[in-house]
Picture 1 (tube, protein in one colour):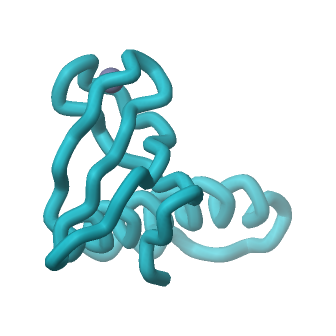
Picture 2 (tube, protein in one colour):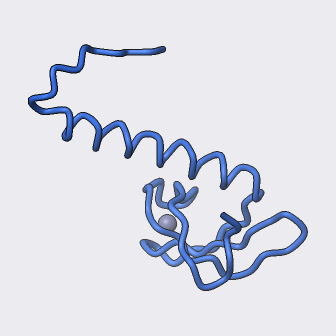
Length: 81
Ligand SMILES: [Zn+2]
């Protein structure tokens, strides 16, 4: 799951504060240059931080989809933390 130039990653733009797809522009020494698709501003993000964010985002998305898909399946509330 390396962020390759030409792909997009969800990230919270530090300029417009929106969770939005960012275009990966360049990758250098563990840092990723991203461009916000909302305000066109560039950000330089640590690769580890970006992956962490991606995981959190995917986790949240999966939970939302799980909740939608859990209709009718009598699955008890498993509220974790
Ligand atoms: Zn932005």
